[in-house]
Image (tube, rainbow, N blue to C red; front, top):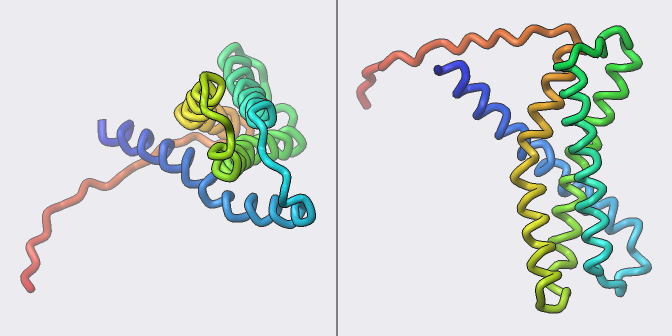
Length: 163
């Protein structure tokens, strides 16, 4: 049970930590490319397209995992397949970071209403399914890299130390 719990914590931490570490980079890149257009506002359609783009990348990872379960030998692709899937993993994390930056910058300017509420639910959905995409990515990447994931977590012993 300790191994499964540790893997779950590791998965959830990685699913959110990697995009969180990319947020400053995404913000900086966005700021550099939008420098002269700082007056343009985010639209609900633009944010919906960002959520849809992230969803497509996530569904591609779920599809890759389903193909892996069905027996598609991704590892035969060698280094090229490894590079492609690592880039796709980067897109998954970069997509969530990009989504977070865009929402932070533009969601407050949207008019109140049902479309704004639906957009917020879509953002929450994207955040909640990020660990699923990460789990699918890990499974595929482990297979491609030929890694068998045997995690051995040593038990924590109680140590009595005085001050």
